[in-house]
Length: 516
Image 1 (cartoon, rainbow, N blue to C red):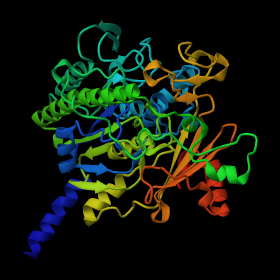
Image 2 (tube, rainbow, N blue to C red):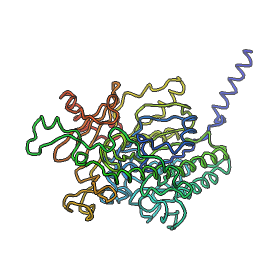
Image 3 (cartoon, rainbow, N blue to C red):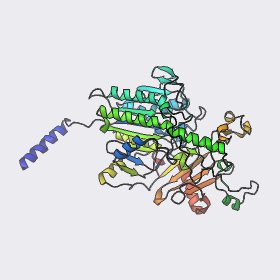
Image 4 (cartoon, rainbow, N blue to C red):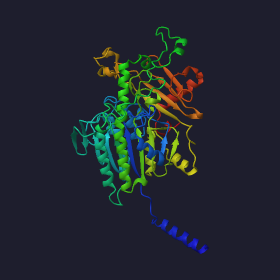
């Protein structure tokens, strides 16, 4: 027996020493990024098949957050692993850095697809890229590219299809993306010597104009928007602008933009209900797309070596605090996103309340691929935490020792003025639409930074607004999950001061200095 063991040890050493041990192939990555899909208002309900499959065989993260609750900055953060104050895409406009020259010259060349492509990965993109992308050229890092011109839509769109732009009128976009991605997976796995792939698919759902596929129209016609405790509940706090005393401060609950909301009319509530229904209906095609892609991965025998990630760029609110429908606010409806992951080393059937941000996906994917994480990346990989949870059969052991940064820059300017609504161009209000009773859902000074604090068993958010009031908000989500009661002045002065100092550091952080 001893001779056999010695001989076996010698053989294993020989194979290892001369590089003849078979290496495990590099993993594939399929990243699906939906648009404006919330968690708090049950926005994942339509994904019944996806949720069942990825929850059973993978991990569902219950504390996943965007770094900026608006499309273009959030997508730029996901692609770079950096906060918006570093990649400088701060809103959806070209002047705000969305697909601007600075982005294209400095950050695209070192984005996630570029890093993977340089290290032997086949890369594929289909769907909405960045809001100001107009199809002039294929962005850096993509071998195969089908990028939507502009913002989300479902029909009558143009795609940059590699070397040319192609327009479609009556092809439902989510279905087209499904077919493009399925074909790519089949083609890229035809032989055993194929390169690993990174495929990113970004369907328009559940973004406006909320157009479901014809086969799904009316499926949720009997559903109403979720009536949370904050639904159609405008802030009732009082404020006397000329007498800004400490007593006045204590009586104010929300910052001025939310505080300005009026009780929603019956017509507005009807519109919110209709949008809620149609948002859900748009996601049914995404659920079908996910099942098709998983089936193709299984048929091509690469499912077990593929990480599947499902998430969204930001959340969404519908009627909370009498805000009709939008994102852009620092409440969990807007900043919390779905995140489900399945793949090698990912625990199966687990709920993880470990806090993660969209900026964490790039370093995690790089580590999965066996690549180093560049020093400029602000996010932090959670590969190690997943592996330890799987090996030790424990959960939630890393969940309470982190803070996440949320930052947003108000977008109001002369160009966002809507003459069909009350007000003046010089007010610099934005997102004022007739279907929202002309309630303006953004403004030039709807600018804030927040800390989502999970340390020491906390579940808290602290926000500082850069408006004319220097307004502060804080909520204890253990006690107040709907963020109804601003507790900022119940915090000790030293707590507020420490939060302010932490925000100063985080809003200037780069790389590993962002990890608190």
